[in-house]
Length: 376
Image 1 (cartoon, rainbow, N blue to C red):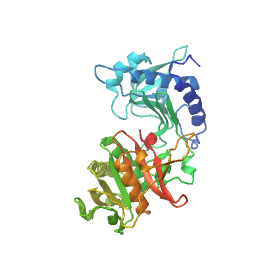
Image 2: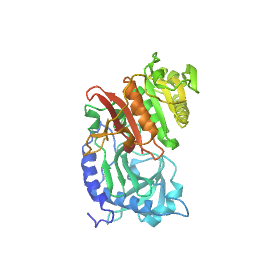
Image 3: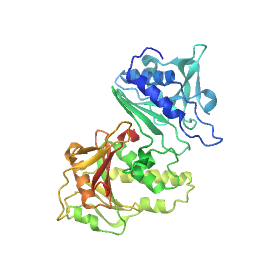
Image 4: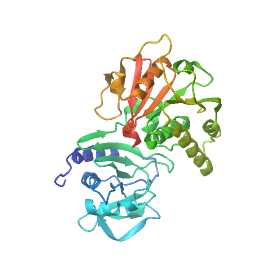
């Protein structure tokens, strides 16, 4: 192991190597190479120092994938590899800042020094990559087993704060279907895609950066209106079924046109959550209202305490006041789920935090799952 410059990368490299080595690989599938600990360290270390630099006024936004030339097709190959120095990475950052474009890194020469050999959009399954999110904020991910899947976060590093995702969090008694979906490597259009639509909505809500609240309520039941300030300015009559109709057409083997239509419908619905207030949809994804104000249901008690968990190693459940979670959206979401126990609430903050609220019968209280580490 080389002398450390970014100390948190040392522990992270050791733990991630263990985790990646334990993945179950489907028989016959060609997957990415698990990097040795020193190479994981070098990737994280290089990304961290590059993230603190500027090219003119811009912060580098780089995704570096550990992949050899034979493992990816249609790659741009450099005649001379580029070093992992912060200066060289910052220079090339503008060429690869768009989503889905990766700098390809592999040991070069007799000394096995990590260098950038090219650029590619296509990666083998279970390929490790390190992505710069913001200055000093990195996400370590692996590519999905299927082309249409979501990259799976395995660690998030922000300065000296390291959060390693616990892959067993979905097996906990308080786990939700959405949390389990976010911890899977399967395609976002796999069986159980109803849950994965919420995943896509969560990612899109977080991406617009304005904050928002999405309420998912039972279909064919108007009890949720008792928790809304009346009259609702943007009540939708009849419910708009654009996203719901697409889901009802899901055959299990989606076409490219269906996927594109789904992406547009998800972004359109997530965009409504940017309006001040809550967006309400049914469990069948039909739009009921947006910009609605949540109020305490008549006869209900005010929520004073919630339980909060995060799917990271070493994380412990915390009992907190709803006000400690964030602003008025978090207070409103906790109250809504307390009063409408068969509903869930998804809340994105402007700072990038993302929380899922659900009622836990076992705990007899609102359970809040902080999942922003899974969505970066």
